[in-house]
Amino acid sequence: MKLREYEAKKVLRDYGIPVPAGFLIRSADELAPRIHELGAQIVLKAQVDVGGRGKAGGVLKADHETAVPVARDLFNKKIKGLPVREILAEQYLEIQHEYYLSITIDRSKKQPLILFADSGGVEIETTARERPAAIRKAVAMPLMKDIPSFMLRELTGSAPREIDQVINKLYHVFCEKDALLAEINPLVTTPKGVFAADAKIIIDDNALARQGITVNRDLSEREREAERHGFSYVELNGSIGVIGNGAGLTMATLDLIEHYGGRAANFLDVGGGAESERVKNAVRLVASVPSVRVIVVNLLGGITRCDEVARGIIAAGIPQKVIVRLAGTNEEEGKKLLAGKGYEMLDTMDLVVKKAVAVAT
Ligand code: GDP
Ligand code: MN
Image 1: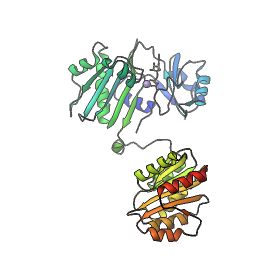
Image 2: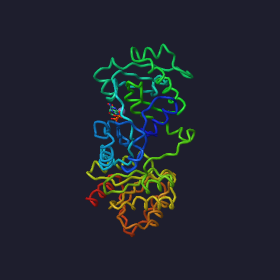
Image 3: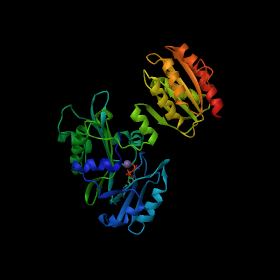
Image 4: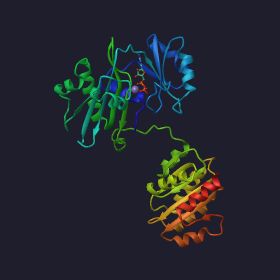
């Protein structure tokens, strides 16, 4: 799970890495009462889950006079298509130099990989392409508690020594927080010392329980319901609802829809061994999206029994057209149950998808 910038910065602060003074606001009105906590110059940073916010207009400079209207404008903007619901208001930094620092796992060596570059602010991919020699690398040994100073020297070269301690502390963050990525870009020098001007931390999803993290993603009511039922469910913006079993079959159905020029409204993987109650909930959930005009049910009966699926579809009793492909265990019983009730049944995935695209467009 990716932490938002303000969450990541809180972690850095807890580990003694200097971050600029700042606070989170959820509306422009929350800014004025606390603006005195920051200096005369401030930065307003949209907390949206994309990189490159700076270039996309999501990082804006302001002073005490302009801060509220600038924040209001930012709340009304979309950054790379995402609505701005939270803004981090921070003390403006007098940046002298921007560095890049990150720690990830080197998958081939199976050890933490530390990257440091003297050109921060830009994406590391760009630096890697244009100035590969500017990126310095070090691989930490397993069970290493601290990064030894010779290694820090090799990484940072002639950069200020203060940065060595930032690297060491970020390494502690990386290990103790079960991170897949801990990145400070840019790590900056200012007349007041070194600061993490931006921060990105991705926690290994498998470690969320150990880390005591409750997922705070912005889920829609429907996505929450899907989670409660244990469905893998994703919303898109077309008009065809998709139900499959198994990630592979579900994704293949989605690909085929695109192939025939259709657009899925959502897709749901009911998982293995779905019984009628579960299928009913799945069909109702997918059908509850107003833009869904037709639903493709593409299920392979293995552990899942096609007659159970048919009972679930019938029990759902939804108004939209349902186009079904059932194959495998108890296929005949399933088809018999659905026959004559207004459901379209076709024998191959290709046919159901083609039909759904035709109905939807
Ligand atoms: P990103 O574009 O999403 O990576 O957002 P960043 O937080 O990295 O901000 C983008 C760029 O804005 C940084 O690389 C800096 O050059 C600039 N920036 C952000 N905060 C400050 C600040 O306090 N002072 C100055 N001078 N520049 C800043
Ligand atoms: Mn950045």
